[in-house]
Image (cartoon, rainbow, N blue to C red):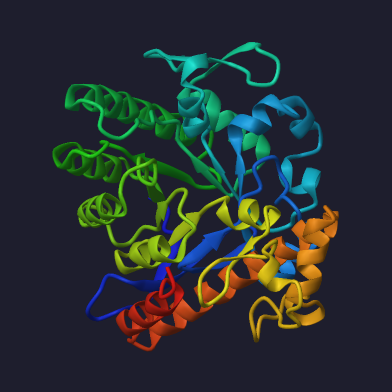
Length: 373
């Protein structure tokens, strides 16, 4: 089994930990937040600016890239790194969640999943083996297996069938990856919905296969925050500590801090960039909406001390103006701010872990961030 993650420090009273993830396009310090670049671009910001902020691992989407521009185009360019001029690490999800979200257009079979393109209605099949092949063409530094995502509160019998399909597909993905040379890194995905017996069974079975890393799936899909915390903590205890752990689709400070406290090393979410394009930005006192009239005369930056272009060059008043005028620069500046804010947030988390004061940091941060809510 490939060892790609070295733990540098573990907090003595929690499972929070720092580490170094060694990938083909450079080391990544963990815990790490990954900006989402679904179509091979992080919306509203140049790739060079993403890296200038400090990121060297972003996420792209296998489902979307498979449909457009397609594997022929990506293959002709030698993969997504060269195609998109991003010279650092890329993680690609399998497309399983996108197929799940388009449930009216797909059918799960033993061999794989048949679905209709949301672009032109054409029919396709993704198998565990094909998903690995597509991600190899993309050139992903971290690839995800094809899994079956389920909605919360489905019956136990239905959840068990979905998990058993996921387990079969995971083994097929791993076998095909090894057969093709085992290049790059393939992560397995834990499922099991919100049933403890299925979660435990899934975590142990996926761990035994031998993936270089493991993702915890089926969370942040509409459950309560308490359910998220409970099932995250329950699931993580059954995962091997020597492999990187990834929770997909979380991007708010409370969920990030809860994940870190449970020993999670990686996470991603579209919230930072999507909310930015709508005028919502992170501050230490919670998210604020720049379009509100309260900011019209404000000469203050979004966040004192922030090093992004929005905060060092412009006021809240100006940013409100360009949003109200529908200027493209508005979303771009807000996007850079949100990604800069989260990068600084993660740096502060890592420092708090290394200095053995993570619980205090978590408590004080959340008290201020949500104090006005």
